[in-house]
Every structure is written in C-alpha cells, then in structure tokens.
Length: 418
Image (cartoon, rainbow, N blue to C red; front, side, top):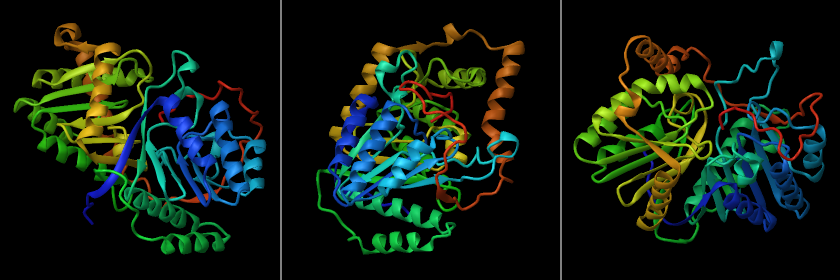
C-alpha cells in the first residue's frame, strides 16, 4: 500500500548525543504510561547506564517499558545490567538471538538497525544515534557526527502502531504467548489520530525483508527525480544501486546543484578503494563531493530543494538497502528543511574537504582494476546473497554475554557499522 503524507507534525532537529540524549532521557523521565525503545547498539557505558536508570524509574512508576536491542550490535551486556532492568519490570527483547556456532554470528546480514523511541504515544524520536558514549564529543577523535529528530503530532501514532506491530510479530516466537496478546490488545485499542502539533507533512518509511524491501530507496529516487534546485545527501556509507546513481547523474545534468557529504576516513579501507570508481563517475557528471574529516560521519540525512528532507537510520549501501531493518522519517516542511540544510552547509564549509578530479588523479592500471573489482563486489553482493533466508524476525528475552565484564565509561565502541 502506498504511503500517504500525514499533516500536522512538528519536528526538532537533534545533532549528536549532546542534543539527543538529554531530550530523550527527559521524556522517559516524565513517562506515565509507556516507553518503547528500539536500538541497534546499546553499550554498558555512561550513556547506556543513563538509559538503564531512566527505564527502571519509568517501570517502577507503573509505565509499561519495552526495549528491543539487536543481538549483533549489542552483544556484550552483562547479567548485572540486564537483570536490573528485568527486576524493575522492563521487558528486554533481543532481535534474532540464537546459537553462535564456533563463535560466529549467523544473523550478520539480518540486523535490526532501527533507532526509535516512543514515549506515552505523545512524542517519538527517530534517527541514527545509538545509546553509546561514542556519540558524545568528549569521547575524543572517534566521536560520531549524527542526527535524530524529535516528533510531535499525528505521525507519532503511526510510529507507535509500527513499534507495537513489530513487538507482536517478533513475540509470536516466545513461549509466553500472553505477552503478545496483551501487547496486541493495547495496540488495537489505541485511537487512530493525535491532534496537530505543527505544520509539517511527513511519512514514516521502513525497510524490511518482506513487504517493504525497497521503500526508503524508492522515496529517495522519487525526490531526486523531482528536484529542481538542490540535492544534499550526507551519508556514512554511500554505495547505492545503479538506478540511484543514474538519477543523481541526470539531476546534475539538468542543472540541479547535487552535493554529497561522505566519510573522509572510512572505517574499512575496502570502502575507500571501491569509492575511487564511483567518485570519478559522479564528478564527471557534475556532482560535487565533500569528505567530512572532523569526526567519523555516522549521519543518514538528505535535503532536496526547499521543502523535502529525510532523517533516519538507513545508510545508502547494500547492507541498509538490501538486508537491514531500517526506519526513516521523510519531512515536507520549509522551515525544518532550511534548518537541516543550514546545518549541512556549515558542515561542508567548516569540516569537509571538497574532492576534485585533479586531486584524485587519473584512475588507471592496477588502481583502476582494484577499484572496479571492489566497487562491483560492493554493489552486487546483495543479489548474490538472496538465497539467504528472509525470515520473520524473532524477539526473545535478552541474555547476557557469558563472561563479559561491565564496560567502563568509554569502552565498548566497536568498529561495527551502526
């Protein structure tokens, strides 16, 4: 079913953990009825401990509290951490838990990558920020640059319905069926609409492995085709499909100012090699490329013209576009779009290096072959991996990592893409 624009919403842009964590923790601290959180990464550092404290307090006040973590992204939580949550009545769900033969994690290519929070069905948060200290500037040079939004208005009801549906679907595999029926009953009983809180129209768009396999990418391509003046995409992992790249090229050829903000220092050297061919192709088409060099770029945002923008969890690479479970909000609002556009403009001016063909040099010989092989492997391995089962995701009670100690305040920041 085609997504529809939902009017009457208000959005606040939150940049990095300094703006995001105080807002979401304050909302949880005031929760009266319900807290639902989904996150890819939860570390047992100072941010994870703050979240734990807020969730425990909400549960002890009588709120129903559910948190879903990804088993791949959050593998090292201790029994002390999880036990304190469970003892307070927090329901902790682990996405795709299961045996790890020979220490391997077989669900690597089916990850719950969403970052969502809904509190009392009154406010929601969606973006790319995980609950870990590496999203704070005081973490040091490896602190991440990222974004989220705080949402008020009718869109919150749709996000709330989605979160409960995800819990109901995943919990069908639990032994205690009563939890699923209770959640489903509450989900059905909720009223359909919330009052208007602002003037922004918006959509909540997800990617899964069943009914919405390419929704996020499709909405990107629609916006690119419609753009008349500018396109600015800031994305940590940029290896979209050929149709996406072709739309960017066509936009640049018809006079649209197309700019990409990408990682200047990728955490995987293979990505830099593969990007060589992509950079040459886009630069020749008139696309301007900026490499963000101040901090590791983790953002997944875009602006098209004066009224369209998106913020979410989805990278533009094969993992996010073909495997991960993702969630973005797409916003149609002049004021908010200008806010995000101004932020990205400052990023380009103050913290990025513009890539030029002259600086890249000619790509030929062995470097050309390396780039060709790396790029096409990166582009096509999702189609080669389609034989992997597109299973219905399972949610089971989270289990601690055996023998793992509690992490200190700044530990736990792995190189895993989040």
